[in-house]
Length: 416
Image (cartoon, rainbow, N blue to C red; front, side, top):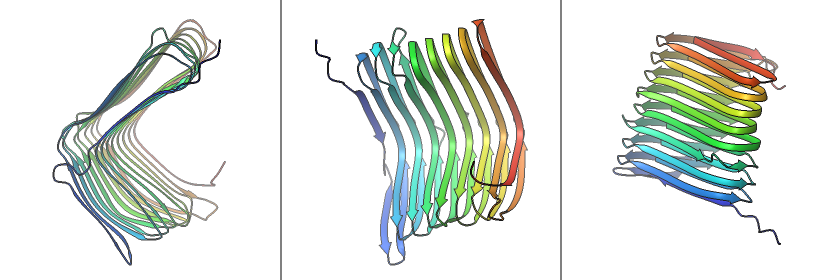
């Protein structure tokens, strides 16, 4: 009997609200460069959801679900870019993916579920960037959830399932550019990411991840670029939570990971100086939990991490100057759990931090680092790791770490 042709079972749903209610934007180009003036106000709820019922598949099973309140993106090449943007979201943003699977799935299961309140992406190549951006999410809900229900399924091709919920995002990239300006982010939203999976047999790599962030700013610049930025972030919602539960009767290589962060700033540069002023404040409860169970397993990992405020500034060049201020009064609670009966290797880790800052420069460039750091943590910080093996196992590694304030500044040789 001839073998049926491979099939791909896939679903894609995206809900995006652009320039809703009283939103305006203007794009102009002058001899000196590109000017962008943007104002977006989102008042209604934005909801995206889908359900896939799959019984047997010879190729990939894929699902992508995304919901966004406000979205602005643009690129300038060989021109200077002046960007002024205000994004305000006052409605709930929710995305859900439900996978009901059975039988033999010969290909991998790949699913992504994302919810974002305000999103700004800007890139410049060969021109300077001047940015003035404000993002504000009100007392709403930004949630993303994925559920994989397959108590009898055989997932022969493994799985990669990710869930992300972020209230405010500013993402920038630059090459041969000078990036300067200010980014202000405020969130009063509850931000929640949930990832659940129930399966029978996975003889391949399977990874389930959840991530939640109230405010995220990232800039990656290279090829003789430089940075001069002020970044202010405030999180005041009730909670920022990430939860992952990955379960299988028999799994060869199973991982469940969860990360929750109230405020996050990531800066990287190559080829010039970095001057950064970072100011973060968190009032939200931050919780991250990762649970992995498997009766029989080969390798299993449960990893959870939670941070109130996080800053990383790295310059693969000569000069870094950072003035950092972090105040965390929200609690940070992290737990990682694994339970199994008979197997080989299990790795469990739980890491909780109130305030964290890292700065580094290149030693072979005769790098200079100037750091001013002020950190205050008044919220409770806890990390718990639990491992239960009811039968036999080979290697068990478990760690739990809780830190109120941590600051690391160093000059080192780049590369391996």
